[in-house]
Image (cartoon, rainbow, N blue to C red; front, side):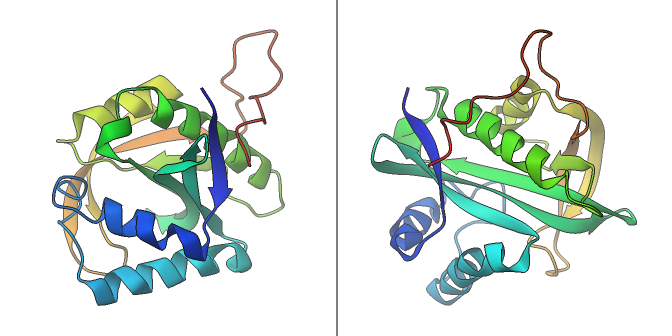
Length: 186
């Protein structure tokens, strides 16, 4: 399967609109109005310049089929990396999210090598989002338990989530494997 991650670009705005549906956003408060969607797009474009994370488009061949990101944030008094993802409905259940997540974890492990970088990667799917919670398990995250999680950050709106974590210093790979394939990164 030819799954790649490509840093967010102007051309990904259409993908963001395709993600902004009641079905795709049912676990995170529903679709956003166009003004907020455009502001989100601008934040995604600016993320790499902050040095605190990156949003990626997920490609299957040459087709944009989803998104995945990581960014630094404060969580319970410490700096962590947070991740989240979307795969468009026609492409769900095909291993695309697993391939994208595996590639992203490799990228974040590399980012965590820098001085003062967070040492953990967390995911906070809704407790009701069975597929995202299953993905966390497949990717090797450890479930810490349910929590109240502010989403979007700074909104004051809390959602009931599961806190999943990966220790970035632990490769989590079977013995004999030294790294995750890097050919998933465009």
